[in-house]
Length: 211
Image 1 (cartoon, rainbow, N blue to C red):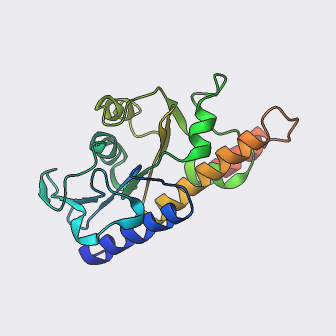
Image 2 (image 1 turned 45 degrees about the horizontal axis):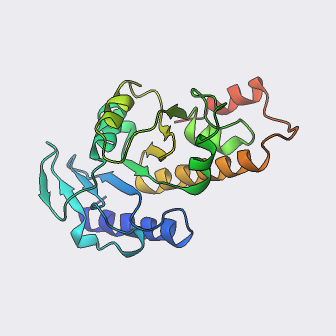
């Protein structure tokens, strides 16, 4: 995708997240890979509702900032996904979305499989979401924690902070993030109830479709 079109798509998707309450204030950040290997990234302290395509941070393929405003302070987690996921990472989205953060506060979460297996699409779009410890915004240790996963996960949940999803392109990554948030909301709404979760065999069949 060309530079101009990708800039417009990032801003369009970001505004959609903002308008529906999945991003608030100046929280969250998005990055996407250009055809030449460079990155476009939302600037620090910017609001998803009011992004200017021309002011997105622009990195070249060597990781040098060559244009736009100062980038998000959480570049380490974005770069870690690109470095470890390779061709599978064409975009990265990080939010502080309400229900996923709320779910991460419970002590009894499965750290290797954060989302209860209740419906198919979160499994198909995300696989197993790894729950990582709390990291303050901008802490470079976030990137190291993701690198330690060796590219095995397309999505992680930063406890008490927010989810991060990597995908093939900006649209599919945003859609996968929406599945994560919806699954977290469902998990909270059914928490403590006697529910019928998917079986191991059903999960096995679904995971065979994960990219």
